[in-house]
Image 1 (cartoon, rainbow, N blue to C red):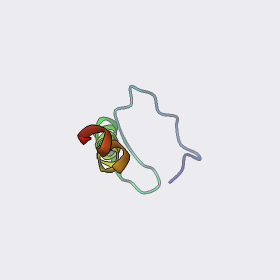
Image 2 (image 1 turned 45 degrees about the horizontal axis):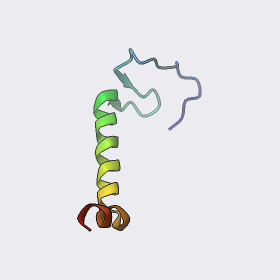
Image 3 (image 1 turned 90 degrees about the vertical axis):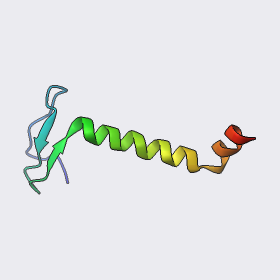
Image 4 (image 1 turned 60 degrees about the vertical axis):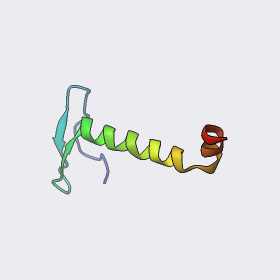
Length: 54
């Protein structure tokens, strides 16, 4: 993974295919997955669970 010798993406570029590994990426889908993962990590944190459930 890397960005050497690739064009710079803008916010208008919603989908793209990696020139190195040829995997097709959908920006909105990837963002949703990242948000879900962070939320799950936050909920699993004992510090935050104690704040929520007392």
